[in-house]
Length: 331
Image (cartoon, rainbow, N blue to C red; front, top):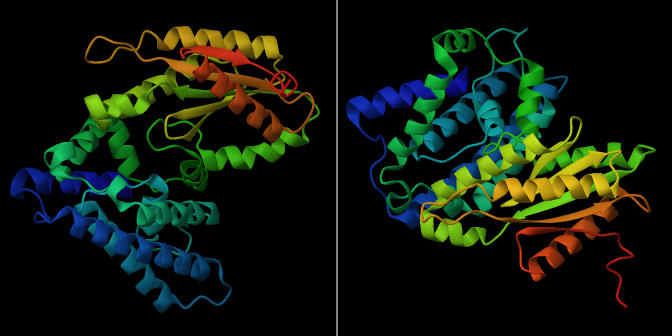
């Protein structure tokens, strides 16, 4: 509800009165974003302590909640690309006592995401060089999302707050691709290590991704990552889990798969990605490392898959390499 309300209000404002924030030097914008993100993390942590405490002070909670909403508005006006966890954590709390309050995992995710923004504000600061007009560029994306929702779905969303399960799911999802995120991967590791069956691991990395961003812009790079996520999901088995592992790297956990199963899937993904074209007529390729947890924990298999991925790069990219730790041991 909050996300759509903000998008609609900002879209109307952009169309009728233009950008809400005067142009600032890039360094000033980044400094402002850093300060706001740092304060927002403190506010989220304070609000979490208040909503989970036995003797919460209602007046103090209202003050902290109001400040969070104020900071959220300031970050939006600066054109900062915020995760859904941040939006939910900083949005106004329900007015009634029986309303849904975000679970602790969402506050934790928001605090972590805000910490990353504070550490590297340049990565989220909208600049004219990147988007022509930061506010309009972001709002076009928001407007397209609203159209995709449809009138009926939009009306339904505006009538209710997200359920607790939906809010918690936000914390586990990558904002760009919709895949499970690295936070969810770390959470799932214990589950797989406790299981009494083998788990194959696949690490997938976009070849020369920096070149894609440098030559065609970050918008094109983002679209490549979204399309790659869809291709991977379309080629794995039911029950396999695809994660946005970080940057241009993805991870797949394949419970119960053999090395041959995983290797076949990896080759299928490599071939499918070659169909993704770039503006200059060239094509995207990926390198894939595959391993299996038959002789250790899943985390060990990931380390081996990472070495196999490096070997795929060394051999010329656009391929997969399947290996066990024994295969990659020095002679």
